[in-house]
Length: 337
Image (cartoon, rainbow, N blue to C red; front, side, top):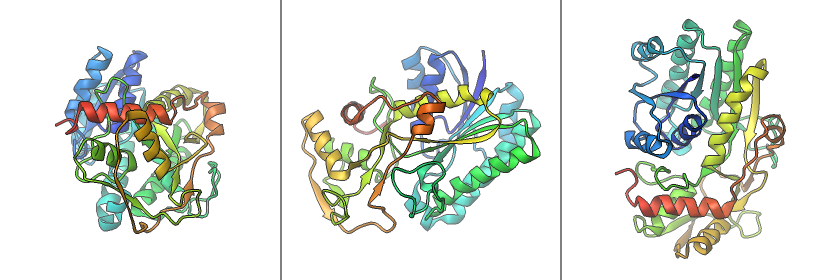
């Protein structure tokens, strides 16, 4: 069976991707330092699938420890999730983000080269796009990240693209995705952020379960129908399937190819709140507060390229996103703890 290395595989998107990989017969090895994830997520991945994976608690900055992982297995490809991921935090700690995300990727790529692993799917982000990019955002829209987190994603894209010049046998897919939400329908794995959540859905679910008193809505005076920001939300299971389709596509490409993963439409913050209340019969108290710096009024994807070339499209609508997110949180009010 084909062996896949998943960096950051215990995280929100990584764990859901491991489920998809195991269910279609891939052998999976996960490396994760557990700085923003829990080993319990991988135990539940095995419970969902009835299959085993291999886990190494390894930081990708640790060259020697990561090399031991490469020595143990012959990997066909890497799916690279590992990295710090909070845009706001990256503004406060830029050196930590540049050191971790970029240096860690360089260490990974050096070992891929040494052990002749020629295929990689990289977890990039819509944060690479410029504020001037017009929605629906296509892959050829101007890039210009506005925070260190987004800049690390953009720089890593450049590093992987440059690698192809030195090694034309490399096959690289860059996945720029928008706003992952929801949870596995089993309710066993889901989003479990440490500290106060920065994303909308875990804020809503933590209010619903009583961990937070109210939802803060950052601004209601944007040029949108209800004044709140509009974003493209994608169910995490659909996103995980996108990584599987990208992995299967690698053998058909040369060089590096970029794909947006999104639903080609957006929902406002208040639309999401109302949908969550309707679907789950819970009340979400909220408070309008000042805008956050850097928040765009509207951002959603043009994912037609992925629809066409990856044969991928989001299947789960806002109803399923809300239902699955609440099932996870209500079954696990304190997350994996």
